[in-house]
Length: 68
Image 1: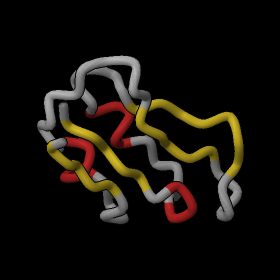
Image 2 (image 1 turned 180 degrees about the horizontal axis):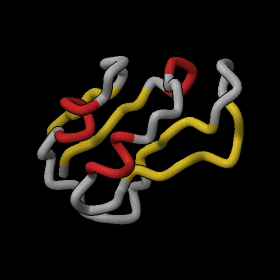
Image 3 (image 1 turned 60 degrees about the horizontal axis):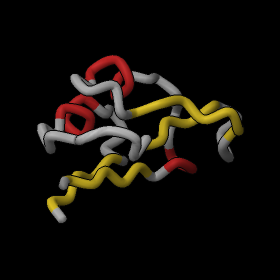
Image 4 (image 1 turned 30 degrees about the horizontal axis):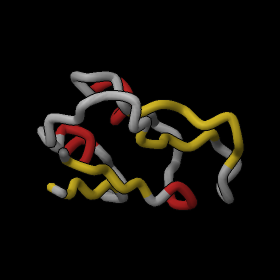
């Protein structure tokens, strides 16, 4: 199953990854990151297809998709 790694401290909170995840597996954290925004995180509660739309759409290039 694919795995997503998000560099939370560098997330600027645009949430484009959240909107573009076809499975809805990227959520918003309740905690603020170092930039003062609620960062995105990968919710392991579903089956990621590994489409990498989140990584492609991220303007900061802080998302990596791995195939485990």
